[in-house]
Length: 108
Image 1 (spheres, rainbow, N blue to C red):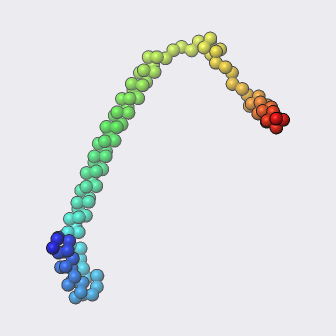
Image 2 (cartoon, rainbow, N blue to C red):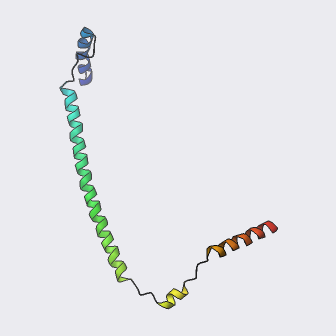
Image 3 (cartoon, rainbow, N blue to C red):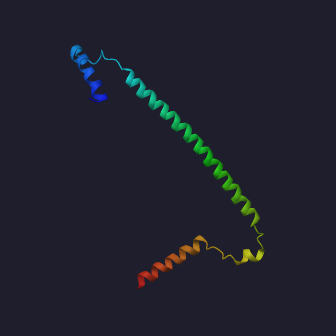
């Protein structure tokens, strides 16, 4: 006979004699189970807070390193470098090219 069946067999005469579940009371075992779940939840939340603190410190250090690297490798943008960048098309020019492409596709 294991512990669970032992608990169930002692509860059967109480239920059989009273015929109602209203007269039964939660026992010590139920209280201990709820207490253990509460302690486990508390421990998990405490550990999660510690892990998130470590992750936050890690990401802050990584961001600081990236910012230092970007500041060290920053260059001054010259007029020649800006002139080499191709100009973007306006919305009207893009619409005209789309019309031409659709006419070519329809004509073929």
